[in-house]
Length: 397
Ligand code: PMP
Picture (cartoon, rainbow, N blue to C red):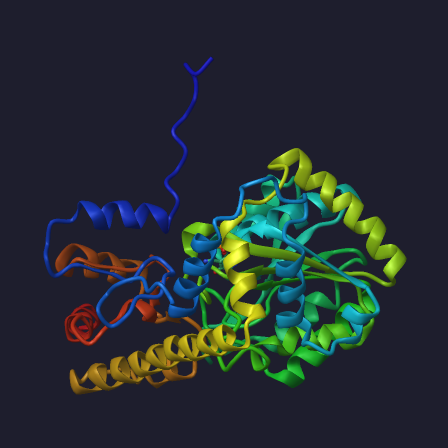
């Protein structure tokens, strides 16, 4: 049965990791994958997470099945991060949240449910987008198209192009939007532009799907929820995927959530029953540990404060690395002004380096980046930044 099976292409980013691991140069630097590292080059285990895990280990809870939708306390905490503690949507029972296997799992459950709900709809993702968006929605059976997003000339959002495209789409089209810290470009919309996007979605009857993978990495928990809050006020029904991989540094625990805003409490109940069917036939119910840890951190005033401080620490270190990179490239007298790196938000910088320049950084320096020119700023540190600046300056000559 496998005789005619073809080799699938390597995942563009996880494939980079394999090449990096096989590189024997001691000076090699991996700026490919979207993971936050400390200045010591380590993936942190947050203090708030450690404390919650210690308490959980001591309590030694049994490992029974979770409900299909996951831990109630976790789902409530996730909704409060998204909508704010005093949200009317929550108190009116219009939202449902289920614990999911990371942001990816949340997107996939949402996509599978949308396919059952509206099989003829098309999905629109930003140009460019997180490289898994297209494959994920295609694997749920959708045709996926792009809407204009990044403007290479201004290094910002091509807002006019995006808005005009959305305004031309048929009702029911599914629009995947990066809620903050756009991956890969780091270019986000302003608050006023979000309001305009909400209005277009409302006027055209579009179905927004907000992908929230970096809440807290741009400005802070509430400030980064601006898109969610703008849609919440509108009365629209919409989807949100959350990921805590980065914000809790719990990548491998697969902690995420799917939230759906409905028109009423009664509707929410029916939608929840259908989403549970999707989950039941995929993986039955989510794992216990990651969600329990996040719920425990968010339920304790002390641990929550500690987490917010640690998250702010990550955010600040990334900003420092952005500044240092801009300065070091200027010191190396590169022709181009890299000041734009300071304006980009989140973990990444879309450097504008070409695929050939990225290839040269890899072969000549062992500095690994995505071929689109995306580098992970959160992988820079005080020890590797000079070497990386040397590599970038060299390939720009
Ligand atoms: N969406 C975006 C925009 C992402 O950048 C990522 C992670 N890189 C995800 C979703 C997936 O998150 P997770 O790793 O939690 O599945």
